[in-house]
Length: 136
Image (cartoon, rainbow, N blue to C red; front, side):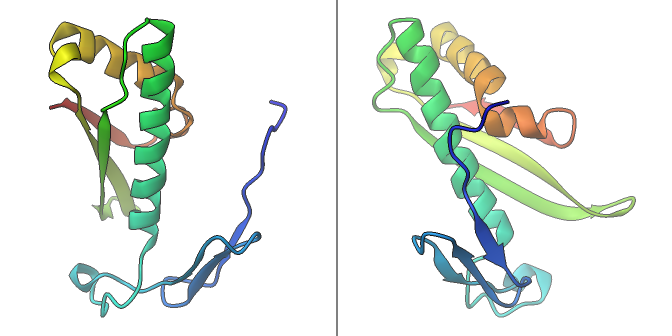
């Protein structure tokens, strides 16, 4: 793969900071209360959810344009779950895709499946974690 862009960020643990090389991200990190933390910062699961939701929405726009379907009012919510698995901790994701009524039904289902094939986050997670697609 020839890289078109490289994002660079540095973090120093779940109770520190995450900073991007360009300064656009500079966030305190904290464990969520559900995992015993104080919740006074963001966490890796939230950052992953935001990135996956944005990337998937973009992929949906791409496949929509290719199919000549306007996906302009689509909204993607990513729910990233963390839990114990056999070797420590693991992730799973639910992608909730809200589509306008104009593209509901089979068309929406098809576009979401196509987006899941081309989205870089979906490609990176395929075979590694469970990703559930929900069209709303």
